[in-house]
Length: 401
Image (cartoon, rainbow, N blue to C red; front, top):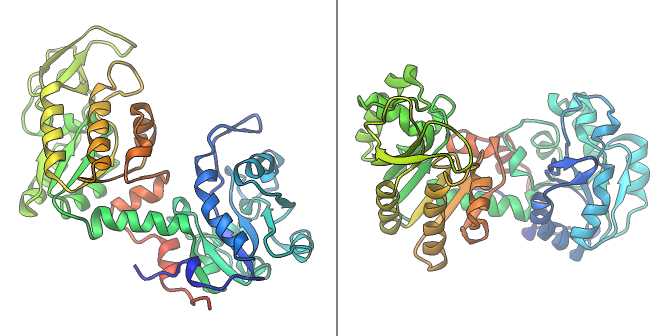
């Protein structure tokens, strides 16, 4: 990928507009998860030490172009200061006099958080006038928000055409990890895809079978493929209307020499609740009234063997209803196997999208994977093989000196 990193440019004394994703989980003005804030710290530290004047751009919520006090970024200041270990100023707007006044008073190494960019309709519209007003505040544009890179907004795409542009350390890390997962991976490659519906992941599945050696399926998604092959899936969640699409994907996979791996056995129950009565049955013959809610021990062992034979694993989606114990067993077992192989230097493991991060946190292995992306929509669009506007803009941007 042809993009410039902030480590390749001189930022000393320069005003750096850095697009971050601070759209963090919050409740009653309190940040509930600092993962995105923590992951931004290396870029902030680097820019401060290099003597930049750092101006942070971000969105929060969906104010739809209106000045909504409930979606102001001001509440983040105490958390940012605690996580980053530095003082942070706040500008009550991201453009105009209020922003300019704060920027004019900055010294090298200072950090300022600008108000929610989505308070202006020009952000989502990628309006040239709004982009110009943002650009007036900075000398260099840095995009460190991969999770927002699938949006062609003013602060994620437009600015890269107005200022010399570079990728932040987090963006660089993310793009390198994704490149190692599908574009230039160590082979063999296994992609494990779970979740409830193939209808929401058709493009993902069609793209992956062209690039991976194995496509391992779990969750309710696997039921649709089993059903398409004539299996009795009982009362399991299944998209019967997607039978033909499932068969098409299997045909595409066959032509691409990608083996689609389906559950051999599964854990079934008549109800979804903690410690519900359950049993293990053949995945192709689920009793009437029972639903598959996790993969069984034979499936776990088969999937683990594939992991051991591979050099790269790409993970998207759980194997069962991991939110309800003990139906997180399949997901946990596979996640822990991937983590062990990764720690032993035998596997590169890249995960992200949807419930994946929560599932890996539940398994206690997030820190043991090679890379876990916190991006949702952007990660899935990348899995679909789409060009992401924020990334494409960096690749085509004017290089910073």
